[in-house]
Length: 193
Image (cartoon, rainbow, N blue to C red; front, side):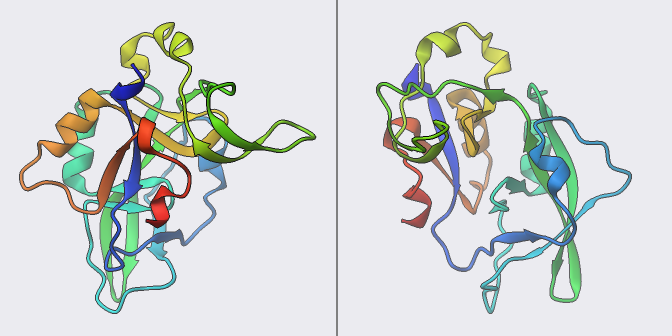
């Protein structure tokens, strides 16, 4: 089961810009659905590439997706996930993207088998050197409710089931700007390699 899960990361390309909030993003860090009257506003994050390549995936660090990825994922009716319209300022233009807001938090880090940096006072995970998922916890959750989720212990880590990864990667042409790292090979510094 561990081998069925992947962490989404941005592609290792300096041409694909990071995104930043151009408004308050606090509503997206409360672990609940959001209701908005208009698209959220994002901007290119620093450092801005001289010739930014607008790819299918950018990192906020939350996943921000192109319309074709949004259309594919929307058909999956992902549990406790929203595809929120996001307008991104790119120089003098505005480009429509979609924030993948996942509020499906699953507490499933196997603290005994993972290699973690943990705060001694409150047990909060500060870093993940090796991630092992608690398969008993995952087996107790119906598969449709764990196709895409974030770790409750570290909500910036977005986990995708192999079935979703396969569908994303089957798009033609292949999506640009993302990597899916097997959980067995992932740690929190992999995004910098």
